[in-house]
Length: 225
Image 1 (tube, one colour):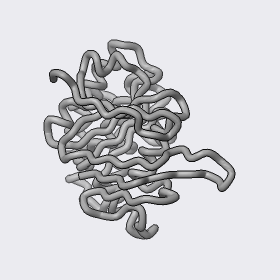
Image 2: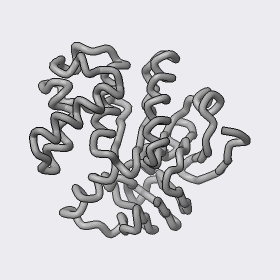
Image 3: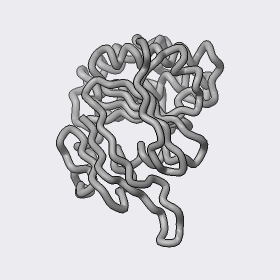
């Protein structure tokens, strides 16, 4: 599903590489954590996977498509396969919950009744169908994160990328968020979750990739699931 070959990313000729010589394969339907200290390269790696950044060198293949050489006009089609959950949510503050979640489907040209049905379905799954006419700032941090997850899941992505999704949430809400990811993974979505929270892997053990100053220094499979 995801293949990286000797991938490096530098943001300037004199700067250190944010990602160095990364070779990695992720199978369809896997759920894995990407860990490492701040600045280890976790966010850069995710950004390259959804084509917000291009690698300085190396190859990235997603569902057999070479993302390293993708043209700008092809990026929207790639992103139809990928859901992204950002640490700061990136919700549209002037739009309602319904409009935030519906946006991705509308951009794909889905019919109104299809959009309505799917949005309500995914909001019900995250437990926020009663909030669909609220604005993001009227919601708690945990509710905003669930809306961000609903927006990512509404397109039935092949891949879900999550960047520190529990960074600002308490433990109870974090476990609720992880249950949503587990259910998406059970339906076949491949999930890469960047986190510095090691307790997640203790409670929800999965494969763990460890980055250090841009290099892959660990690739550990769970002893049990």
